[in-house]
Amino acid sequence: MDGDRIVVDMDDFDRKIIAALTRDGRMTITDLAEVVGLSKTPCQVRLKRLMEAGVIKGFRAIVDPTRLGFDHVAFAEVKLADTREAALLAFNRAVRLIPEVEECHMIASSFDYLLKVRTSDIWRYRIVLGEKISALPHVASTSTYVAMETVLDASAMRGDPIT
Image (cartoon, rainbow, N blue to C red; front, side):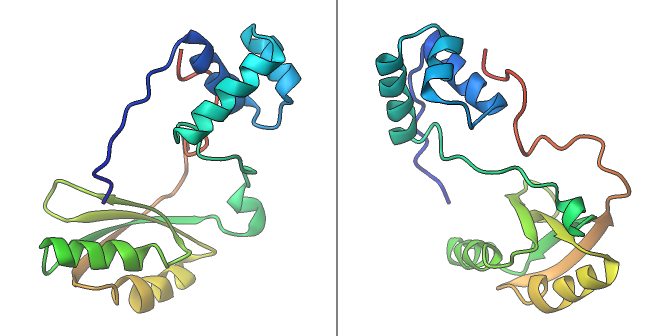
C-alpha cells in the first residue's frame, strides 16, 4: 500500500514541462526549453527536480499490445476470503508477479479487487485465471468481464492534461 502521499508544489513552467513530455517524452532538453519558454539550464534543473520528487517516474516506449498478438482484454473481479492487512499485503505482492495483469485496483464494492488482464486469447486467459489469479493468496472467488472493444485507453497520457 502507498500510504505516503506527497503533493509536489508546481508552477506553470513545471506543468508545461510535464504536458510537453507527456506528448513527446523523447524531445531534447533544448526543444523542451523552447516549448516551455525557459533557457536550457533552468529547464534541466526543473526537469531534474520533477524526476527526483517522483512527479516524473520515468520514460518508456508505448507499445501497441494488439500488434504483438495480445488483443484479448478481460476484467476480473476478485473477492478475498480474508481482508485483514496481512492478507491484503500478501495478495498485493503476489499479483504484481503475474505478467498478464496490467492493472490491479483495490475497490470499495461487493468485491475487493479489479484486475485488467491482457492475453492472446480467451483460452490463454482461462489458464491465467485458473492457474495464476485463482491461486493468489486468499482468493475466494472471481468473476470475469470480457472487453469486446476498447473505446478509450488512457493508460498512456496524451495531450495537455495538466494545464
